Image (cartoon, rainbow, N blue to C red; front, top):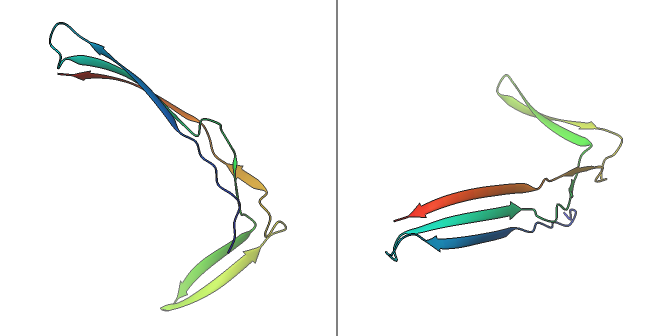
Length: 88
């Protein structure tokens, strides 16, 4: 089964600052971007399969809609994360 292509690009940047004269004490500022280019990811929709259990017997019901086999919907979002870390 072949589906649509997938692209997801992540990027993290951080900077350390030394605090005081001790080399082991540092303050770190970190910025992370997930899906930075914000490429929408197409996914299949239009066919829904339901499994029903009746008296211990499993039955399968397929409900078809108009856009079967087409990637009409898109998912994906850009996430940014900021963090400050104190190392001692």
